[in-house]
Length: 130
Image (tube, rainbow, N blue to C red; front, side, top):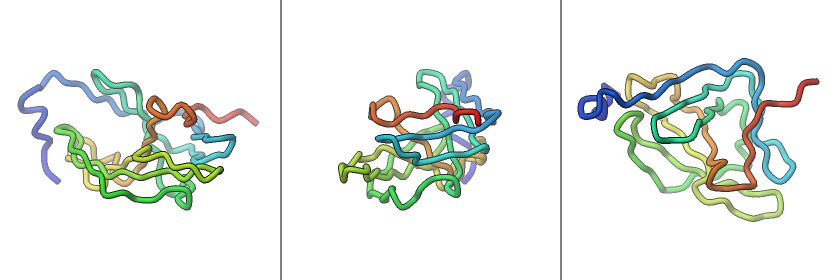
């Protein structure tokens, strides 16, 4: 997609990506939405930590794309999904993905992150050891 314009105006802004050691899970209403050993943790200045899961490790049948997008000057355009809860409830725009991020964050392309801080029923955490 090219270079992120945000760094031109705020070169000291930090976004750190790090692969998580071990498995992570996303749980909603006692059901696992994602389970992966290939998660990227993103620590960005001014934001809570976010965990990006590969689509292949997410129960995509519980997600529905929405028309909502937002633009981050560092990562690019985010596309949002609603989550269909087990009881039929809907969590609007609870998941997002950068399909074509700026060059500095290509590793996030197509991965999904969950708003566990905005929706208290969503829990992102290390998977239990078996």
